[in-house]
Length: 339
Image (tube, rainbow, N blue to C red; front, side):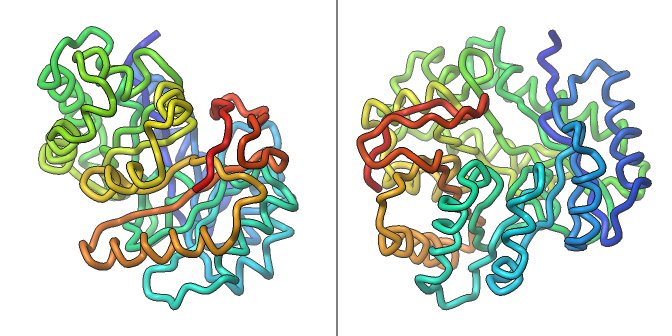
């Protein structure tokens, strides 16, 4: 299989339709012809009713849909409809808001009513527009962006510069493909790891001879972040390192060993990452604790003018100390720790 993996092609539209889906197919087809493996095709729009209609039409799972950022009131009004949909992602922007217990309660409402949909929801702060990565992706203008699973490119690399050079080669190849397309918004060069082995960022860190805990106090993540921001020929979206606790299975192992606490997650996100991502939460965790973390992320995001997000996931059953049972191929089951 090709290691040139496009995690997502996302088309943004204020009036999504079958034409939007057709545009995504066209872009994905161009990439496939050039030897890329396209994992997901997505459409993002603030037009909730039209997105729900498209989600229903494509119940076979060929496409993923998102509504981007919504206010707390609109989310509360639409929450039951969104939770009943097949696969719609959404986020709550808390950048300039006095965060209250009611904001934290949205997460617990999802946990109570449709816990699997915690995977589709995140809180965001200073969120950049047009990222193809859900649930942070949000609409600003019509067009499309592309995001990769670049960890796989590290398979035959024995040094960090080798891997970074391969990533840049892929960005330039895709840029050349679409640079003359007026709807090409750009490349989100975020590091989006998955599973284990060549697809895991932590797997690559270990391959370089670094223990994960040791690596947290080296400059390796800063080197990666600086490169993906500076060498991207047309940056858009997040352009940071994702530390998805349960999607990167080797990172999930570190969590299980007590080496990826919420503090370490926030620390790494502050200097190189994009926030708390697929981090397990027990159904008996107190909403006050979530509120404290949201307020901290808001303050740090504002202080450093840095995009951050908070995505907790629950299986709706596991309490603190229990093992999860997500029944989700993208999430590794772990014993839940207190936040």
